[in-house]
Image (cartoon, rainbow, N blue to C red; front, side, top):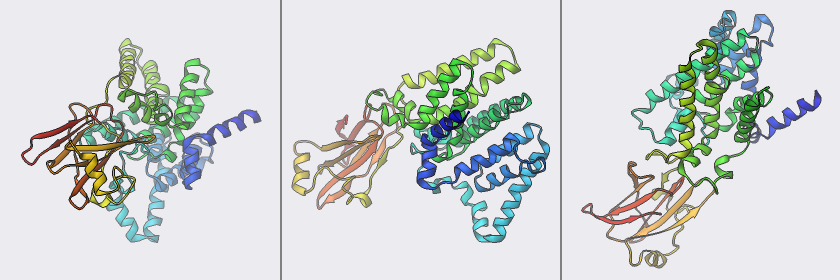
Length: 406
């Protein structure tokens, strides 16, 4: 009915991904539309696959739809999508040869060029792993293993849905896999997860409707901010701040994907036990402390930032700084913001090195000591939470001179 269509449109528009597209003039909504129209088979038969290929040429993540066509036995659509992707690339090469060569030979792998991938705005699996504090030596292999599993499960389930005639869920499922698997999934990329929430809300089962409503809330509100006053445990805070990542992964592996694949493919209890174990593991994320290296928003400021009053605010004059550190090796002030905490302070002449640990057992993070005023040194850093943080200071000989809990 018209009322349902209007309600759906309004719900979509109030979501964070839709608002981000409108606010920043992004094109993600058009990329989603191109891929979804092709996945649903709404284009003329002889052109199916072309739109997905064009979408992949604009942004690489829709390439998963090209694989989907192959897995779903849509061979002709697969060939047309590959041809469209390659054709668009050749057009780009002809129009901007140097830029095209630079992109395909270097820029395409340099994902860090588009910003801090560990920031909370990047709600991909890779972004979450960076916030967990996974070592750089381990990160590529672990990330590839996780996203390969997510994509394999999503594609298998999408194929089952296509064979059952449910092209809508199949297309949205593949789209959610692109959100989870992409190295970078900013807010405006996450429209697929909003569509998944709507499909769950429209489902018959009460459990699916509840899950869809919860997912839609997560895709509309910043839960880490809204529930910050009550999320006193670091694990709970981490789960809230990564709710959109966890939601996209859950759609792929639990909602539309893994549990259904297990139930339809192999009817043995071992699959249900594995699913229950996975659900229990997700629940433990919210109950256990964060991994020791995890600190989603940590950043220490250097001498280049010393004139910024937002970072260095503890004292406005040499005498005020001297008063702050009087009687102790380290003096500091704390400023609480919606998604982070800033620590800003002064050290006396005995301090030669400062370190901060986000949690017990975590690797120490070096805090630069910079000259704030002549003869007066200070420091400034931000952290997601100070609940388990320890700030330590050492003299020239490496002897501990201060051990503080901000």
